[in-house]
Length: 277
Image (cartoon, rainbow, N blue to C red; front, side, top):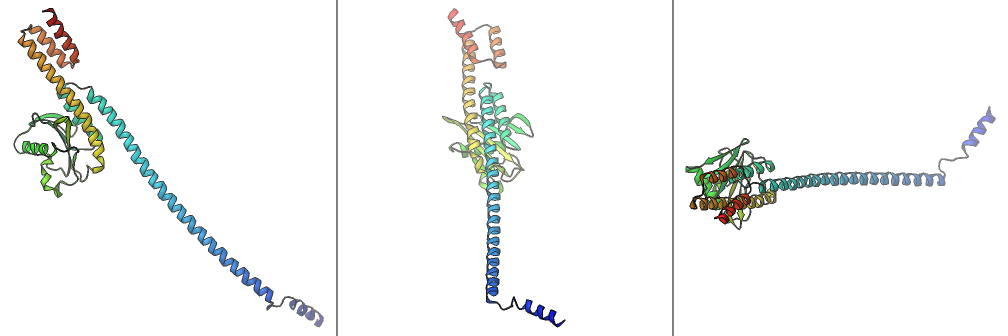
């Protein structure tokens, strides 16, 4: 029994607890462990920052994509609107088309088109209903004041909060409107104004200005051609009446006007009659 005890004591004395090399090894291991923990913490922080930056970058990319898609939609819309408006030569039909098409680009509660040669006569769109209207009294005064405001402006007048700008209250054509825009229509000269009203605050924003300006340019060009077409039609009818042409021929011209036949057909017919005379 004593011999086995001696053996155990001898074995335990082979690895003394206060061995300097062992202590140094333990210290070194502890230091390496701390460095490893620090490195892991730094790596975790870097990964977190990288994930946050990636998330932010992805979010910004999504926002830019939404803006790009909106711009592409606006370009397609304007191209379609331009083709549609340019095909209209009948003034009343063109006025209807202008107020209808602008409501495709922007959610509005009212769109009113008034031309400078007669501000009393307007084309309005409310709740998807387009109608010709004759304004007078306070509403006519508002139209006249709005027309004066924008007649010299090169850009649309946008009001995000009508209650905050009482000096622009003339733009409120609907009593419940909270935001509004007045778009001058101009092609070499001032043609008129397109007024938009919305019951929402900030429904019209400054970043929509390029879209509104592009639309105004297309509408103005179409109005210029339609006005010229109407003047030519009136001139031809006047000439035919002054020449006392047959009533049947005047009826034919009237029918062609109603059918929106191109002006060159009317012109060629009249030219042929004068050549025969």
